[in-house]
Each structure stands twice: as structure tokens, then as C-alpha cells.
Amino acid sequence: MNAEASGVDGGTATPGGGAEGGRRAQLKHTGLRPGWTTGACATAATTAAYTALLTGDFPDPVTITLPKGLTPAFALAVEELAAGRETATAGVVKDAGDDPDVTHGALVRSTVRRLPPGAGVVFRAGPGVGTVTLPGLPLEVGEAAVNPVPRRLMREHVERVAAEHGAAGDVEITLSVDHGEEIARSTWNGRLGILGGLSILGTTGVVVPYSCSAWIDSIRRGVDVARAAGLTHVAGCTGSTSERTVVTEYGLPEIALLDMGDFAGAVLKYVRRHPVDRLTICGGFAKLSKLAAGHLDLHSARSQVDKPFLADLARRGGADDGLASRIATANTGLEALRLCEAAGVPLGDLVAARARDEALSVLRGAPVAVDVICIDRAGAVVGRG
Image 1: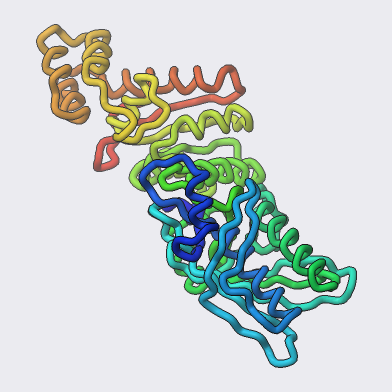
Image 2: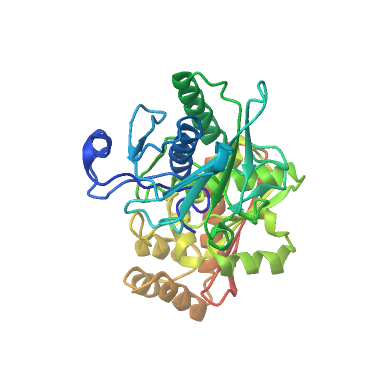
């Protein structure tokens, strides 16, 4: 999963310069370079294309205003004005900054065509931009996968350009992303019912490196799509192995599988507000031991396997002091598990049960039944709760 791909992205601004420097001065310094969302790139490309349609000239760089007032300038990679000015196309290369985003470097194009007065602004999906095919997303089925905030931004910029040049502002905007359908295979889009390419995303226009906001947003959209499809049982899984385990155990369809990764808290908090009848949490024993110990972010940089905690659980399951001491000093969670298996102590079940209790505490009485499955690296079930 990547940042924008699952739902997040960036753009290409001119290096250095006042607008870019101003944006960075306003962002909290982290030592990492922020980037631009695909929505920001599409807005810049649309603004340049519509300006060229009305004037014959492409502004390069083109400056836009983002929701929080930032005014970045974007260099154009594509400028195409059709004979007779029937259409104009501009393209911007997405720069995701230092975020690990598979859409980094993608060329986002916008082709603008005049429409009859009163037609408003119409969005179309060109090559590499997906189309919504399932309910539950903030767009109607059949619509181009251009999210609400980027749509609003593009409408606002079309209105500004139209006002500057005395035009009506009635246009068709066709967005495309070079190789977008191929890139989308690395995203959640297919599972969410977005077919044919990427989504045009972004709420602020800025990609904050490693913020994981896109991944969390994709988890939420996954719950929305499952609920809209009438599913009553979903599964938060830490990876592909746990997904296969859940499918084998319950026969769940793909849209019921939430790629939870390390974000157990994101799943639980969203399901608390948008309940389903049943939630299964499935993942590696070590990761879920972190949930059992009260951690909602399971990433190794933000939580660690607590071996003394495992030793205490093992004692409650019948481990003697010698075994508990070996567990407390084990190199890994898996080693602790194997020590208990050899001694007949059900540490896997104890961790799963405690993880379930933690999940229920986060759900705060929401009408959701929870079960937890712990697996080893081969996908074998080593604990249930």
C-alpha cells in the first residue's frame, strides 16, 4: 500500500521559489519534504488548460490556491492547444515529496472543453482515472473517481479564470493519468469498486510524508463500501497472509477484507461510529500481542512486543516461573510463543482473548461482535479469542 495510491497522493511544483518556499515555511518541520496530492496536480493542470482555452497561452508555472491558503506554483509538463481552441490539455508531474507513494512521478493531465451556457462543470474519467462501480463511496456509481474536495477546487479555479476573462465557466474536464491503470493495481481501488485507474484525491492538497492519512482513509472507505453492499461481517487484516486465513476460515468476499496493516485503532474507531454486526481481527501473533498490550498502532517504530507482558499472560495460563523468565527474555514474540507451545501453555489463545478485550474497550459498547485470530508467519492459526 502506498500513501496516495490507496487513497493519497502528491504533485509537481517548481523547485525553490516563493510559493514553494512559503508552503514549506508554513508546515511543521519534520526533516522530510512534503509533496502535492493528485487533486492539487489536477487543479493546476485544469487551471492552465482553461486559461489557454480562453487566451491561447498556457501560464507556466501555474499558481493555485489550496484549501488552507497555500499558493504553490506548478511547472507544466504538457501543453496542447487544439486547432480552433476546441480543447486544451495541460499536464503536471506529481511530486509526492519524501512520501513512499507509488503515484510519485505520474503525469496528471487535464483536458478542458467548452460546454453550452448553463451546463456547469462536468467531470469525466480519461485513461488512467477510475470509475466508481460500487456504492458506499462519496461519489455516485458511474462517476469519475474524482473526490469531492478536488472537484470543488477545480470548480473554484474555473470560476476564477472565467471571471478574469469574461467567460461563462461552463466546461467539461477530462482527467487522465499516464499508466494510471497499471499503477492502480498497487492500490485499494479495485477492492473499493473503482475500476480503470487511479482516484484523484486530496483534502488539503499537501502530502505529509509518512502521515498514513491515505491508508487510514482507505480503511474507512473499505468499511463504507462493505456496509453499502449489505455485508454484516468484515475483517481487519495485517497483511495478505492473514487475509488468506480469514477467507479460508469464513469465506468472506474481497470487499469484506480491510487492509488494516498496523492501524488497528483506525479500524476500531471507525467501526465504532459505523457499526457492522461482526468484526474479525486477524494478524501475526507478535503484532496482535501489541494490541493485547493496549497499543492501537502496531508499527515497529511506534510499539514493541512486550515480553514481560507475555510472560505475565503465560503465568495466568499455567507457566511456571522458569518458563515465564525465559519468555520475558526471549528474542522475539514468536520465540515466546514456541516456548509456550512446547510447554502446553496456550499463549496464542491468551493473546487473542486479551486483544479482543482491548478491541471491545475501544468499541465502547458499539453493537459489534469481535473475534481475534492470531497466526504465525506461515499462516497457521496459533490463537483464537
